[in-house]
Image 1: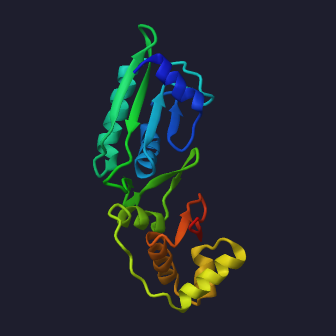
Image 2: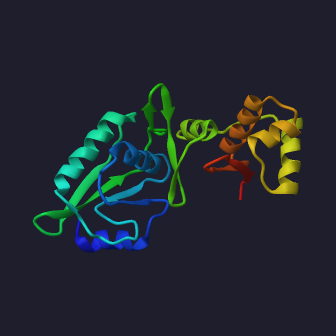
Image 3: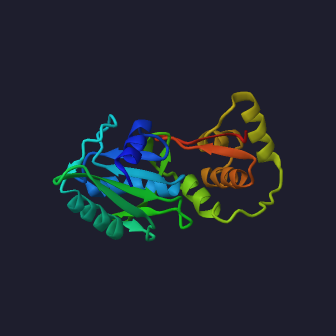
Length: 211
């Protein structure tokens, strides 16, 4: 890893596959970014880079890496594969690059008390995965031909999407007069069948026709 490569990453700005952190001050929060990258398209976490993309470096970078590696090992389930490299800018300061592949073991998650929380990347933000996203990640690892019956509820869904362009689980449950869990199950199945796609959001996901 060269300084030029790190600067190239930094110049791209934060996005779907790139996250910057100045230092490992709150490793329990930074691991959320790592989980999100692994659950989405993979990417890099740069440690020692300011939010604006300035490669300023961090003092005692080896210690920062140690803190992050400990957090990754202790907080993320299942175990996450990654690589870490660092570049010394001077005797005291350096930059670390955590390279996180798109994981075949997704969804990775963090246990907070009794709750399991998975995260995904939406543009340049990390958001908590809804139960529908979690299920799509889990079942989408091994794509199989999904067979489903095109019935009344699917007809209602397609009509709604043709009129409005998008729909949420709650809206679909109301329109089709379904319990929420069944509306959710139907939408997940249609996503896995490549009929529709989910658009994850911080507050409430929505669904659109597959483009």
